[in-house]
Each structure stands twice: as structure tokens, then as C-alpha cells.
Image (cartoon, rainbow, N blue to C red; front, side, top):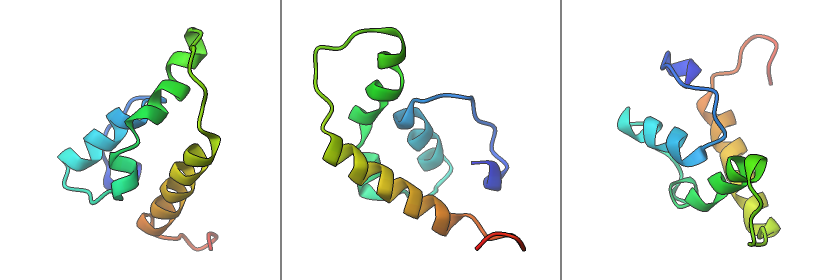
Length: 81
């Protein structure tokens, strides 16, 4: 979002951040569009106890897709490769 010069809040709410990107016509991988469930692990678990169990394999898949997508979307600077 910073590379697009968009204002964004400091948040762990992945769903909110993805929605903001799509509002600005940014193509986001389908897995991230469907990753609403990940937000509760970054938001609610900081403040509340949850009775659900994290699907770690699915969470790693989402994180991997997010990192790969972000790295491909951000132009490398002179010191980044």
C-alpha cells in the first residue's frame, strides 16, 4: 500500500487490508481474497481467547502466497534483490 502511496492503518486485519487494495483495483491472489479467517489470528487472539485451533498448514500457505505476491508487487530498490 505504501508503494501505491495509499494511506493505511497499523492493523493485523488482513481482510481489511485486502479489501482496501481491491478498492484501488490492485489484483490480489485468490488465496488472499479467501483468507478472511486468518485475520482472527492476528486480531482477536491478541485480546481474546478462542476455542478454535489454527490450521497451521493453511496459515503457512496464506503467508507464503502473501509474501511472494508482495515481493513481486514491490519494485526492488538498488539494495534489494
